[in-house]
Amino acid sequence: MANSSKEQEREELHKAIWNIANDLRGSVDGWDFKQYVRKCAQKSKDNVK
Image (cartoon, rainbow, N blue to C red; front, side):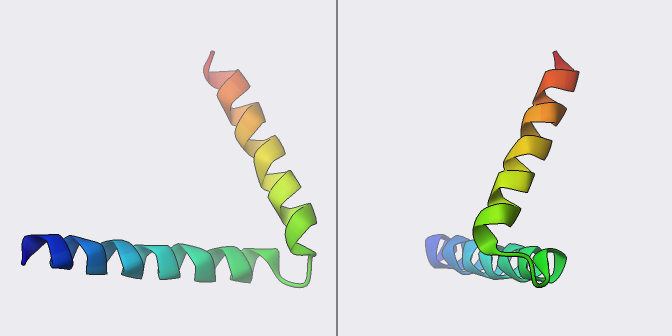
């Protein structure tokens, strides 16, 4: 029972994150947005070092 609850939570979180990404992306092409996010993540990672 706890397992299905965690799976449901994970699914809801996945949907919420996907919706947020779509809102942020707007009319930008998915591939371009993905590249932008990767660059931001890399810069953040570099700043932590």
